[in-house]
Image (cartoon, rainbow over all chains, first blue to last red; front, side):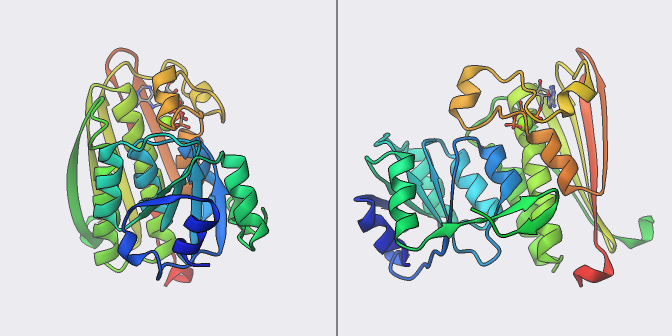
Length: 129
Length: 147
Ligand SMILES: Nc1ncnc2c1ncn2[C@@H]1O[C@H](COP(=O)(O)OP(=O)(O)OP(=O)(O)O)[C@@H](O)[C@H]1O
Ligand SMILES: [Mg+2]
């Protein structure tokens, strides 16, 4: 699914890198508010994972950059600070904001075929939700 | 072996500088990519570097991260001036955190950072003196299988 389509499905607004939203493809997703959980578990080997979070500060962009995550959804209708948007533009990461909760956002994307991101278990890769 | 040293780069980290938090690790990632280090090694080294950098920003006053790239490994030495860690074994435990609420709001304080550094590195050494500072040194090796 294209990032643009994901934004539509979750009734979201694209606030950075809009011009590439019809090109970037996502296939898997991961939801978390604690960045160390994302760093510990999520892998995006094909650069096609979407991160869904309730956190709004620039650290979500840093985390995405480090893990090659191309798209982030900020849920719960929180205001996204300008610094976060600016950093996302700089790093080429698409930011989508939505009023829906993390739970509902994840549910919608999952029901449209976005699988759970591959997660790391004891240092080994495994396929899981 | 020092003769296999390809590159040394130093990064200054300022405590509580949340605007630049992660910048050093981002630069480390760029450098490793340019050197054609295998992707799995880049991934491990940058995750460990980012957790290390965030810990300095959150807990210490200031610090320096030194990146050393060798033919067969990536090494990071992070020295900080700060409160130190009284019980390293306790701090290493998954879930242990002294992060205040405002840090949790930023997405940190899961108590997973040090454990993440350990998981992503082949060698990890932590030395700490209370009220003086902490030195975290880790290495990610570049094996034949990565090439
Ligand atoms: N450089 C440091 N100086 C002083 N204390 C530190 C330092 N690094 C870690 N600590 C202490 O060790 C604890 C555990 O660190 P760790 O990185 O594992 O988790 P965290 O930073 O609390 O949360 P997370 O990394 O998951 O966001 C910290 O809460 C802090 O008390
Ligand atoms: Mg930490």
